[in-house]
Every structure is written in structure tokens, then in C-alpha cells.
Length: 283
Ligand code: HMG
Ligand code: MG
View: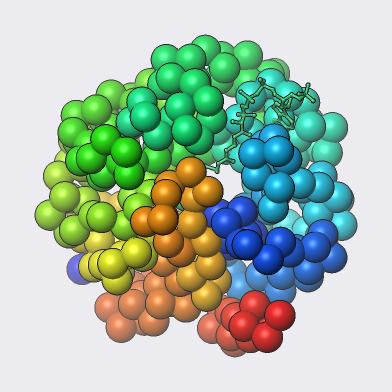
């Protein structure tokens, strides 16, 4: 395989912790991110400015963002679902935000209480503000392979939503296999459809490892030109509105082992990852 350097986005402090039954304190979240900073990630998701009624695990993301030690070598991002979330992010001088929608109407309704169309209406003022403030915006598409409520997703539907996020000005679009139902075949079919609309260099693959196929799916995505990969330390996580099937994200340490096995270039620091992993396991 000949690919450019693989970039890793560490989503554990957000996608991981948002689904933990035993809620992490602000101090623990800060310590986790401080352990993750020397690991060589392109970006670390710090948390999300969503409703604490909906996702109590992500309450106090503002405090977490304030207290972490930030390195200039890494981007620190937060999820923003609406204008209220955007205001909170701006108050904290967050420079990298992620907006999120889905390729499934049923999932969007459960996750952010609106249709796909309505989510794009919410994104308009967020993007206008992001442009004014020169913020970088990542766009997420959930259920890029399958929805826990309405079944398999048509690749063309994912391509259509990706195209809209791209036209809106997202710098990067992360394609989420929210419930881990993907196979290399369905992952490739989806990526092939999306890359007719959005440059491959601006696509990320976001796999949950529910059925142990995440690494195979990531390999298939990389073989098809994707070089941005989302992962979570120790495989923390799941989506609170993904149903019982939204198990953890693919583990960062498994991605690291895979990249090394395949001799793929990356910037990850194995020792720092092991220290962060031990911190999570011994919490
Ligand atoms: P809503 O209830 O429709 O919102 O929720 P609302 O506008 O009607 O407001 C209701 C109350 O929430 C009000 O408070 C608002 O102020 C408050 P009240 O007046 O009743 O006291 N509120 C907020 N508070 C804090 N921050 C905010 C905010 N907005 C409103 N931003 C909403 C709509 C989007 C807020 C809600 O549905 C929500 O927070 N959903 C979050 C869901 C979530 O975080 N899901 C997980 C992330 S997505 C994911 O994991 C998938 C991904 O990993 C990719 C993949 O794997 O597929 C990215
Ligand atoms: Mg996810």
C-alpha cells in the first residue's frame, strides 16, 4: 500500500466518555486529555457542547476545555449541535468545532431531535459564525453504513449529505459507522459514492467496533485513499442514541498496531499511548 501519512483523530474523551455509565469527573477528563496530548494525534476531541439533559457525561465541557494543557502540535475540538452550543464554544475560544448530522432521518430525530433538513438549517448560522471567526469545522455523518432504527443506508444518501456538508464549508467530513455493522465491502461502496462528491483527502473514517470488523473496514478505507482515521483509547465509547449496538469506537492501540503491521506512516507515539491506555484501564 502506498499512502500519505495517516492522521489519527482521538475521539475517546468525547465519543468514548459520552456513553460511560459511570460518569467521569471534570478532573478525570482533564487528566485523560493531558495523557493523550503527547500521543501524536492530529486532533483530540475534548467534549461536546450539547444539552446536559440529553448527554450528562458531556456537561462541563467548558471547564475541561479551560483546564487542559494544550499543545500547538494538536487541534482540540468540540462538538456543537446548534447555536447555543456554538455560543458556548466561542466563549471558550474553541478554534475547531464539529457539527453532526446523519444519513438517516430516524437516527437524527433520536440523536438531535430534528430532521436532516432541519439540521442543515441549524448549521447555516453556525457556519456563518465559524467563517467570521475563521474556525475550522469538521462535519460528521452518522449511520453512513446502517441505522439502528431504519436499517442499511444507501451509499448515495451518504454522498448527498457529505456533499451538502462540503458545500457548506466543512474542512473534513467524518463518515460514521455508528453501530459497527460495516464490512470492507459496504465501507468501500460507501466511500466510492462519497468520493465522487468530496475530495478523498477531506474524508475521515469513523468506525465503531461492535462486531470486531473495524480494523478490516479501516484497512479497506485506506486502500481506497482515506488517510484520516478516528479512534478512541482502549476502545471507549458508543453513541447514546445508537441503541445497544453502538459499542465502543475502534481502539487507538489497535489502529496503531495495524499501521505498524502494514508499515504505514503515522505520527503516533507508542509509549505515550500505552501510558494513556493504562490511565484509562486503572481509573
Ligand atoms: P432539544 O431538546 O430539541 O433542544 O435538544 P431545545 O432547543 O428545544 O432546548 C431544550 C433545552 O436544552 C433548553 O433548556 C436549551 O437551553 C437547552 P431549558 O430552556 O429547557 O432549560 N439546550 C442546550 N443546553 C446546552 N447546550 C446546548 C443546548 N441546546 C439546547 N447546545 C439538542 C436538541 C441538539 C440540544 C439535543 O438533542 C442534544 O443535545 N443532543 C445531543 C446528542 C449527542 O450529543 N449525541 C452524541 C453525539 S453524536 C455521535 O456520537 C455520533 C458520532 O460519534 C459519529 C458516529 O459514530 O456516527 C459523531
Ligand atoms: Mg461515534
